[in-house]
Length: 231
Image 1 (cartoon, rainbow, N blue to C red):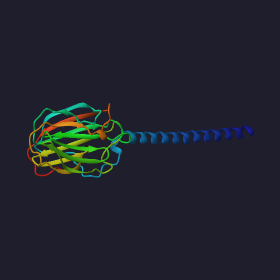
Image 2 (cartoon, one colour):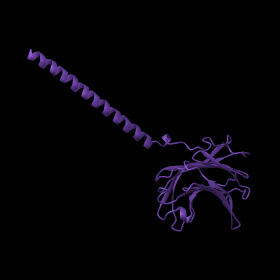
Image 3 (cartoon, rainbow, N blue to C red):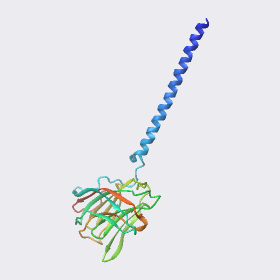
Image 4 (cartoon, one colour):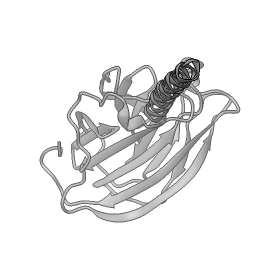
């Protein structure tokens, strides 16, 4: 009789042990899956909240034809904050240009800037404090053209994250895009002429001596004239 009870107890104990093992396995599996999901979210910028401005991934006019690039390079910051640029060595008046800039450091450590320069005097920029702007130098006189503030979630601001600038120049019409978001139409009537096209960094407040800003996929396209900015 006691033997029968012992056998029943052994079976009960076995069932309990199996149940406990199964429960532990379920918990561990759930924890592992959660950690995998969290890691994936952290590593994939696509999972972040998308910027809320108008998306303009296909910003190129239908007439666009690749003329230069894509090419990669580095911009070594000047100690005095002077403009450092990489020229495409072209001469165009109407064009579309795009380039991706790698943040040289986190914006919480020091401000940074991204520049596109064209028509031998004009420049457009976006800064880590969300300022964007455009202006030109003619006859040794600097003239501001347009400026404004980007929405907070447009720029990626951590060290080694990247941001893309795109710009279209068509006669007196300019179109600025940041990370595939249409930012603004810009008046280019103050300087309509062929010129070199460059990527750059500069301004003492937005550079750090010894730092380097890398750029990627610097590309230029020839275009026919357009009357409005693609959005």
